[in-house]
Length: 153
Image (cartoon, rainbow, N blue to C red; front, side):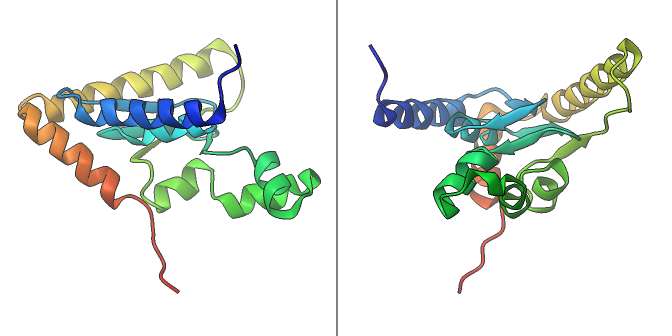
């Protein structure tokens, strides 16, 4: 049986609600392409880390171009407007940390990324280990409520 879009939206909202109530630190890591409604749930973290070359949005650039301009060929323009790169999202305070990725695809580059991620996770856990569950939940809530940039026109 095919799941309806309304069910997907409810599942995403439920996931976000449950994540927001966890009494332990939540660390979200974007390692590739997070471009669906489900990517929203990653934002409900005490810390959101993103690899330098990853992208993170609720919709793919192709989907955005198709909806906005009815023209999927405008993908590059859509990607620029969407601000979905690690640099853009860091500047908008959507993510907290960017992990640099060395050039190349060899195992040595992969191990450097893994080492950087491990270091950041350990640092975050060390910072949070003395916080009460209530403080962890409240900090996560405040972070989520204050992320992004809003412009009133």
